[in-house]
Structures are given as C-alpha cells and as structure tokens.
Image 1 (tube, rainbow, N blue to C red):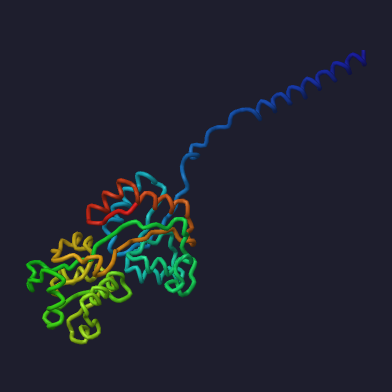
Image 2: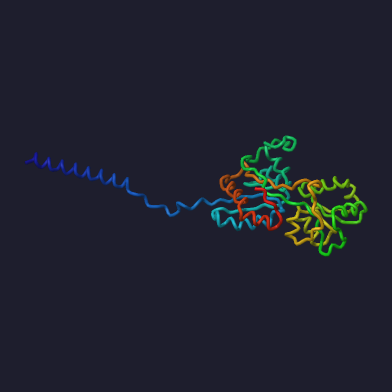
Length: 287
C-alpha cells in the first residue's frame, strides 16, 4: 500500500512540474502588450545658426516643420555670418550653420582651402554640406527716394562727389564684403569715403535695412530679400561682375547633439514647401 501511495505522489509531482513547464512556455510565447509610446520619437531641440537675411523665411519654415516633425523644436540664432562663425568657433552649441557666404562656412570646414580655413578648424560635416540658396545684392532707397538715385552708376558718382549718405555692412558681414567688391569695381576708396563722412555701417544686413527704412541715410546696399521684407524700393541690382554670386551654404556641424534630426531638417529645407517660402521673398533655390 505504501508503494502505491508513493507512486501516486510521484506521478502527481511530475504532473505538477510538467504543467508548470508548459505554463512557463506559454508565458514566454505570449505576445507582449503593445507600448502606447512605441511610435513616439524622442524630443529634440535643434539649434540653427542662420544669416540674419533669412530671419522671416526660416521662422515660417520652422512653423511648417512642426507638421513633419512635431517632436523637434527649432531654436534660431540670427546674426551676421561672421558673428555666427565666431560664436561657433568659441564653443557655442549649434547643430546647423547656414551662412550668407561660403567664406564663413569654409573657415570652419577642414576640406576647404587652407588659405581660407587658416586655423585648420574641423567643425563641418562635409557629407551634409551643400549650397542652399542664392540671393542678390541691391541698392535700396527710402520711401520717395529723396536723392533720386536710380543706379549703382549714379551712386558711385554721388559718392565721389561726397553728395550722398550710404549705409553698408561691416567688413566682417557678408553683405559688407560684397559691397567692398562693388567699391573695387567702381574704383572707390572705402577708407576715404568713411573719413569723408558719407558712409554709415551696420553689424548685420538687418541694421543696414533699418537705416534705409527710417530714412537715416539716402540709400543702402543690402540683399533683395531684405528689401522685400522691409518693403523698400530697389533702385538697382548688382551684377555678378560687380560682386560675384551670393551663395548660402548649409551644413550640419560635427558638434551637433542631434545629427540625425539635423540632417532631416536640412532635407526639409530643400522640399517644395520650403522652396515656396524662400522664393516668395526673392531667394533662388539651388537644390
């Protein structure tokens, strides 16, 4: 009888163990409960350093981008490209740099001519760099055009006669550098004009446009996009022979904390939606 009882007990234990193993297997193969947050991407803040002349368009594009990437917040820093370049060089947080001239981008790009990148800086991801936009340099005048200046030719004569007050960008500002080329084209001496008191300066193109808008000067040399945004009259447009092409390069920086998101935003800048925004103020899209 004891043997029968022992056998029954042993069989019961085996059955229990087998059942437990089966239960364990079933639990292992059971589909997991879906994570309701599985499709929600991690939030990211992109810091974009962009030339001041892009202020209005880039703010519109940031609003449009919310529909494409609601998890991404765009924070802008608008200023002259020279100032932005210096801030990046000094360690400012930045994911994307868009300058109003290749010069400032080249000064941060190790693949650029060492005569331009004199410090051998390696801050630009060359695989992400491309030419985004083209702009035009224009001669803008205040409402009513009090000096009746209609062309760069007339401006050059008026400057030689010390008969006009002109607003231009500082020498470290791309629009100021393009202006220097225009002076060279006409054989004008900037230092002499400055000493004669016929020049005023702005630390970025927006400051120059404001001087024209407020009629603090007789005219100013700015970008066509800024003339459009400020509602200014354009008296003349500089040719390529006068100042070259005005190209805006863009790139993700190697210091970016969100390189994947930064690249995605750069891609959006070449979309049809972004192109319409850029072109609405006078930019020419290059990609």
